[in-house]
Every structure is written in structure tokens, then in C-alpha cells.
Image (cartoon, rainbow over all chains, first blue to last red; front, side, top):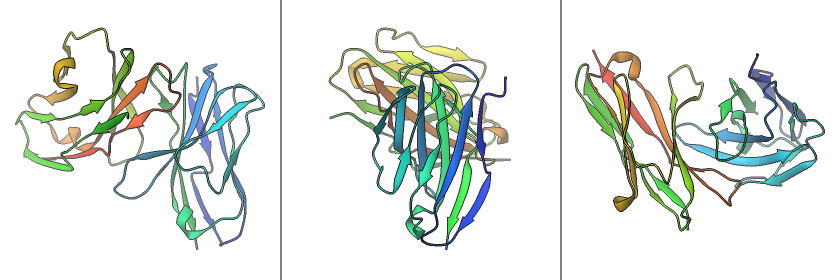
Length: 112
Length: 114
């Protein structure tokens, strides 16, 4: 099992560009989520999904979109990148929010 | 309102000392789950333990132990005979049965000096 995979590992964007961060899991988990982690800070939830076709907003959803067309994939789209979105992004999956989450290796995004 | 507080921003100890990381939570639910995760300097997030609200037994795993006390709403983590490899940021998190969003503490940075 690959677990949770994220691509790319690093990305530099210019202000106003859009891009998609990819996340995939092979554990058949229903619950998936995206977090951002700013330097020296904890995790903030961006969006989450409780199953294919079902997504909802977390604590900091503005500027991001998600979709969940399959159980395995949960991409995160940055619509128009801003310097405030410079961060490390983690994707996670679990059987449910009450179960332990498995995290991807993270994507380090810099917006100039 | 639900909340997780890790009051210790940073702890620094010398190798082989014991160290306790505090986690205090707030919830109105009777059914909830508590977690600890480790984030070493390499950046990945690693699950350490999950505990449900109906099980107050302390847990020991090697040099790691966890003390869950509902009376004080605390779920503290102790590392015995710390090692340099224990240096990391440790996060405590809360999941309520009827809430799809995990509540995370701000993390405690643990530095183990040789």
C-alpha cells in the first residue's frame, strides 16, 4: 500500500495563477481532508469530505475548491493564488473523523 | 465550545530526562476521541495514539505513556528517558462523535539536547 500520496512536493506560483494539488489514498478510506500549516503553527482545516460526492468547508476554505469524484482522490484547487496561501499543505485520510488520520508527505507551496 | 489547549509552546530537556506534554480539552459531548500526533523535523505527521472517552485506562508503549483524566479534561503524554530522536512537534487533537472536523491543539515543540 502506498498510503496517502501527494503531488507535487514543491511548487512555486506567481500571484493570480491557479493550480491543483493532488491527493490520493489506497486504503479505501471514506474521510479525507486538507490542512494547511503555516510556519510555527498548527494545522488548520481547509476542506473535508466524508465520501465520494460529499465535501464541506473547514476553518479556512476561502480561495480553495475541492471535489471528490472517487473514494481514492481528493484534489485541492487554488483558484487565484495569493502570497497569503504560501504554506505547507497536508492531505489526510481515515475511516472516519473519529479514527486516526494518515497524512501525506505534504506539498510546500510558495506564492510570489 | 470545543477546544484543545497545549499550553507549553516549547520544552527543552537534556537527553534521558522524563518529560510530560500537557493537553487540555473542552467538549460538551459524552462521546469523543483524543489523539496525539508527532511531527519530526523532517515534516511528516505520524499518528501516535487514539483514545475514546469511555476508556480512561492509561496507556504505555515502550518509553511513551499517556494519562487520560476526564475529571480534569486532560490527556497528557509522557516520554520516559527521552532521546534526541524524540525531538519533534507534538500535537493533541479532539474528535467529537457528531462533528466531522477535528479540533487541533497548537502543538508543543520538544527539544531533546544530547
